[in-house]
Image 1 (cartoon, helix red, strand yellow):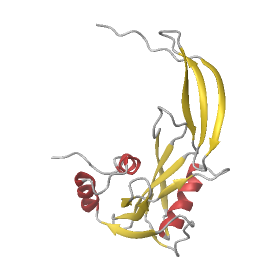
Image 2 (spheres, rainbow, N blue to C red; image 1 turned 180 degrees about the vertical axis):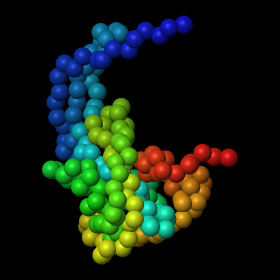
Image 3 (cartoon, rainbow, N blue to C red; image 1 turned 120 degrees about the horizontal axis):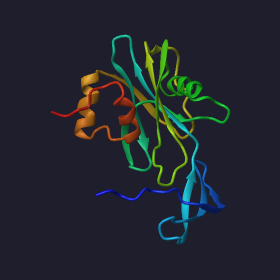
Length: 184
């Protein structure tokens, strides 16, 4: 049985809603190509993000512990954050690693990007591999951050993902580029 080909939905108009710091709402009026019905859909115009998988020279991972308002718990994550206006993803990755952890790396590799939620967000999250990461200074945290750093063996990170202790989907997608996360 063959499915019909999915078509793009014609965009009829847009109106902007509230700017909520991390994203700006936009209401798009679109037409369903299958039914011709017009409907309004919300879109969050969100800046791109970066995540950094940072390995020390001993091949341990530089991880952070950070309170997250959405889950209301301290999460174990990899360093990362918003790409500032005018920054490249690479520049942002270097900056975020240094600001959040006080580490700097010798070798950088772009691992690709993912769309965090294309159902209603416009952004991408860029993943980078930082190798040879060593302490280079002190953290330079934003007022809304309170982060502790832990260097963890790879097997401990994999076990934390499998147990659900590490649950941030974007961190896991970045880690999946360099770690074997298969169960069993």
